[in-house]
Image (tube, rainbow, N blue to C red; front, side):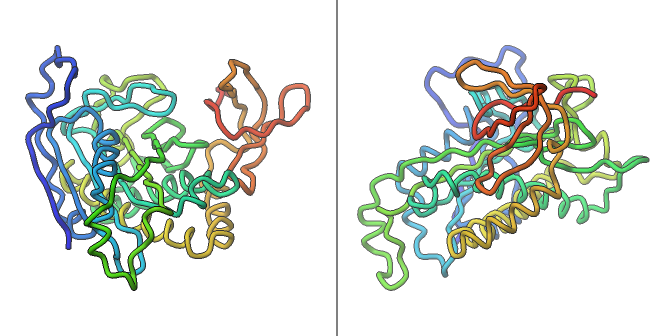
Length: 329
């Protein structure tokens, strides 16, 4: 059964005040379609971070109470109109505006052995990226929006950005989270179908997308907003709901297949990522965790979801983590 919670704000200790007063215009998103497909949904006008709230729910044991779910992974959704301290990879601040942005986190659980396997877990983020692309296309089709003039393709920049017509439209942050004490919630589950939660780890997928952010309010010159490319876009409320509902369905199905048939699903995701990639064949700059920098051409996404880059001297490098930027032509 789907449960929901709607509130005007989440009180977070040590949250700095909003000097511009933007929070006063924020409203809890109305998301009936998402509530119909998710196992639990919480919506906020203002929250510190939807990922932080989702992690908190997992640590409380909220996910365990939803097992078993007819052979598919349960899904919790946390959505907000405004985040005070949303962040992306490497701790970067994530920009958002009330009424103009998609700020939603999706929380589920995966087998610990799969989620911590370096040969497999890179595909969790790739699955999230493909799910986001598919959800955007579904939502655009629902409202009949069409591109303005030339095609504005939606693509993925390795490993976690959504691009539209060569500009950053959104980002994805995946985090592994320990599950909380399951206690009575797990003990009351049907032993014939309940997962052994001790063998599971929580996964939180945070997605931020610029939906209707005006051009003069975009955070960087490389950023873009969906309404700049797609006239006839639905109002933010229904559009946000359509995207989130489609992503719940797509992400749940993809992760379920990854659990049931990892090799086959990784191959399918690999094919999709190659088809949707904005990165491959372009000049890139990779900033490594140790401070090193690699500049060269992105050659391939590999079987473990890593990226191969050939530098300017002809040497190849396999990148599993790092900040990858596409350089101008």
